[in-house]
Length: 303
Image (cartoon, rainbow, N blue to C red):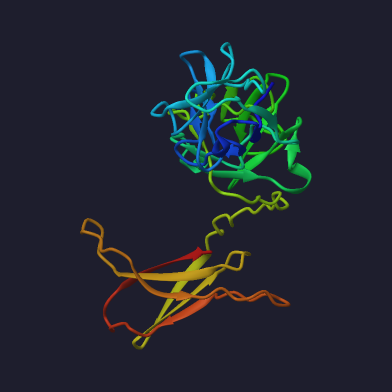
């Protein structure tokens, strides 16, 4: 049977062993590919040497087993009966999975993914997208962690409910088993690794979709003319239909064959607001000129 999030241990001769064991959060959340649990004093872990489950005095394998489950167990199958005493006082305990619990952790930390935006703490989704294919659905930012039955795998994708091509996938044994390593897929390498997250709570369902198209470059002004006066040059042009601002540029004229001067910005004329009818700038008086000097002008529209 699949692992539960928590187990009630009872009947052990060493009284402090009894109690509710929940998944450890953080670095010791898994050991040998299985969830690792604690009741606050003792630790429940899967040992590959048997293979068997054991209640120990510490995390991982750096501990003294007090009670041992039947050999032949797996990382996803914890025996509820048939336990024996090792260092613990007889009788050995019995186990009961807490009703309704599954092997899924409250949240998952995704790290090391080549697509950097995918890395983060994935929390359960609420509302209509809370579950998919009988499994909790998680999300972080704009990415979703969900289970699909057709290929028996967990997926990380940009849309919920199997609606988009996943970037990363991992094969599993069912909706209540989340592999933390062994991920692959079409996303940028390296592939991610997961760890049981310590965060609690839930994320909301995603908002409605919104679309926007940035403004295209406005059309260029045309028919520019320059009329000289006394310490004055008056510019006129035909403006594009779009309500764009106009940048006026000037340079000192150089005869053909000479080294051209660079244009410099004289002024930016703001775009007019839409009216009835809308108005746009179509002229400019340049008064910072010297009589007897020839100038060249150009104007362009900017959003």
